[in-house]
Every structure is written in C-alpha cells, then in structure tokens.
Image (cartoon, helix red, strand yellow):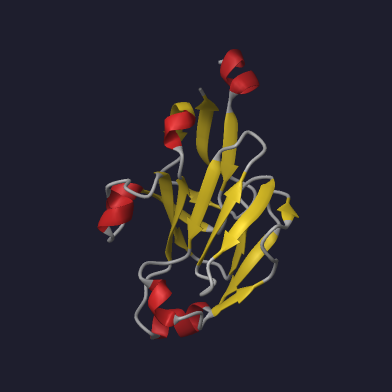
Length: 159
C-alpha cells in the first residue's frame, strides 16, 4: 500500500455529484471506453474545475468539453453532459483560455444547469484518460458522492 501511495497519481472530480461507472453512461462512445478510460459524474453543480494540475490544451469551440495534459504526459478529457455539443455553446461559459496552466480545483467552465436541463440534455460528465495505454493500473471511486476539486475519482499508475 505504501508503494502505491508513492507511485500513484489521482484525478479529482471536476464537478460535484455521484460517480458512475462509464458503462452506465447513455452514450456508446463513453460506455464502451472508445474515447478513453475513466468515470462519469452525475453532476449537481454549475462549476467545472480542473481535475488535476496541468495545461488546458483544448477547449471545444462549444465550451462543452476540455482537454488537459498533465506533467506526467497523461491526457485528460472532461466532457460536460451527453450530446451537449448540439447546444452550440449555449449554456456554457469559458472561464480560462487554451494554453493556461491550471491547478486542481481551478474553475474552467461555468454551466447554466437550468437552461441545459430545460433543453432536455443530461449533465452526466465523463472524465477520461485518453491515453490509457500509458497506464500500469487504474482504479475508480464509483458509487460515491464527491465534491469538485476535493475528492478523488480516479487513481492510476503510469507505466
């Protein structure tokens, strides 16, 4: 156990809510881990934060998703909601710009929950490691309620 703590890395929840197994996500790309490995958060909050220290390398034009690269070269994707790209950016406000170096817990996107839910979209938020081939191991903290920027949702070791 002590060795795991020395070598392991963790990803914090980017948004408050309940942690789900990716298989529970109502989108085949996420449920079958085609886009990467990780978890999803059935979110309850309006602010999406950086789940780790790193650089924001991409914020989708529609602000519904962002990608980060961590110092250990692990690539993360946070996708806010299911099919929310169809909103063309409505309901999402970018709080940082691409290229920004961020610390875990720093706000990245503000979400207008009421607007998005009124439009019929789910705000289940997949949190993915998009280069899982670099991992020696990955563990998930599913079926727990977490706070954004405070609680671990993924624990992994780099190969």
